[in-house]
Image (cartoon, rainbow over all chains, first blue to last red; front, side):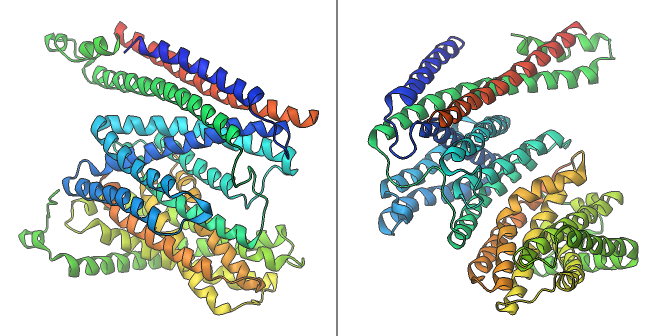
Length: 302
Length: 241
Length: 43
């Protein structure tokens, strides 16, 4: 396991260099925007990565809330299966908005189910919460990048830094706000149940996302605004580079999450040891020799 | 988790549906009575709302041509801030008298307590709105060019949207440092679609330029989704130390 | 054309700056944790 990290880190570094080279040199110049459009190769993959991380956070939070209760857990499993199967059916039967391809919608629905069961299998209890805080923090970092590169891109292209009706950027801003408030809650909460409270906030945030999207969408139809990043189809060569860039950033995100997760594991062990030390520390009798603090220290001191 | 009752054996086997309503009503009546007795808090809140309206009328020129366009936003932002101040108070009293611990060990379903608190807050905030709205109408010479009766569902649904999440997050923020700050920090991001709905709907009716239909449906959806979520998850929040 | 290129460089620079700042904060927190661990071991 220890050797995997340097190997992965090297691979990721190479992938990022390769992706940047593709983005700056190989990808064709845009007819309308010139070379500045290449910001897209950082902006869009960061957005997709952030959304994926927040999605994992949502699934982990749901698991954390329902796993303790047998019936709630069963209800959740059936609902997730229904979303997966129902999503596939709906994708092919009903007309989809904005020219979305049915295969994309079906894959997304199945992915939700798959992620739910995979996370349920490999994470439980406290580790779910560690996964939640990891993905939330790293997700906020990527989301910040989206919000910074977005206006930097908009300014030369549209002449404005921000368009309130720009549905994508505004939805991303709200998502960022929700998750920053999630992290603030985790920092300021001094309850023994901080994890449960944070999980409920994550669930509320996730429920909010479609509502945010639709409210801004309708606002835009009443107040037409420029859409930053444009819509519609893309030159296949550009799409190719975009996907390469996304793969590189995903590897990078995975590395950072790994670091953060290991840090969280260590932090909890040290915290436990500190608590035990403060409980048993004054008692220097024979019973203290066989006490736990030293065992805990040996474990985390590796 | 089987909750113990200290009042006697019969209380262990409460029939759930009828008692839930009775408990909600009893808690709500208690809260209203308490609030009415301590009229100081009520009066200061009303005066605070008045001040907010006055400050806004100095900051945003009411005589300007566009005042009708921005009035919708101003009214709701003012109500939002007044509501946050009100919401912060309502749980604090419970905490002071350790009423929360009593609720936790009682056989009463947590939902009933939540509904009582939310309804109490709803009445309180509606009272503030009833004071602030006429003042805004006077200061800004407002007159609805669209169907004014549609303002009522917007006001009701919008207020409930703020209050239901506000009550929930106020309960969460009880166990945090900087309690009064945590409530708006958590509430505002989640409330953005509702605030957009309230403001855009009100502006649509005041200017008469658009239909407020979609916004009313959005607010209704928002209320249904989050009322369900609050009722489902409140027990976990109440049980937190 | 040249003036809009500076936006491209700014965006790329901003991206890596933010990533490095975050990793830097992780390293800082990790060092503080190691120090706490050392203090615990002493006791």
